[in-house]
Amino acid sequence: MKVDAVRAALNAMAFNDVEIVVAETGWPYKGGDDEAGATVENAKAYNGNLVAHLRSMVGTPLMPGKSIDTYLFALYDEDLKPGKPSERAFGIYNVDLTPIYDAKLTGSQGGLANAPTPTISPPADAPTTSGVTTPPTNSSTATTPPSSTTPRDSPTARVNASKNAASLDKIGAGFVTVVSLVVASML
Image 1 (cartoon, rainbow, N blue to C red):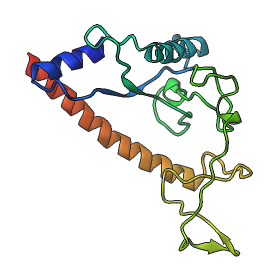
Image 2: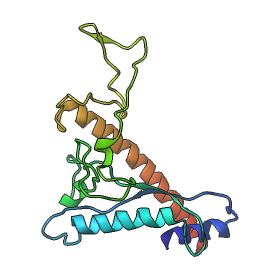
Image 3: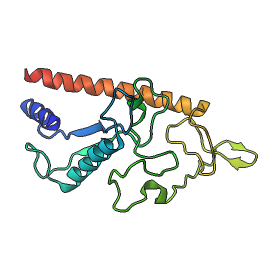
Image 4: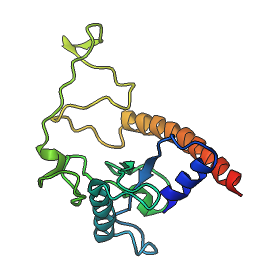
């Protein structure tokens, strides 16, 4: 119903043609002793039912027959994230691409581990090491070959996690500001 509240606010301000995107939603699959709801069963139910609802095209009371673009949080756990244990346990997949639980993202079992491995061709001017061309690593989209065993707490992982967190913080603050302004204008 929160999506309908945003739709109503946008409509009241004559922004009827602005599309709504749910930028982050999910459920933790584990947590601390004081986080009873953070279980695999609850995460599977929440994300699985969300995916089923979006695929059904039922929509919402204000937007019937429409599936809202929705981004699940998160593909992998964020082991370095501060806060309660559940803050680090929103991942749907393990780092080896096997599912932690079936969120019904694909039509078949097995998750991403059975998906074809993407290939990346580095630019012609990429730096080389021992005659082997290596793609740049200053991007959050840089990949590690499947045979690599780069630890999640390596310096590169920490730098990428920090960059991603800083970017998401900026986006999150902007989104909260916009939603707050929309809701405040309704009062």
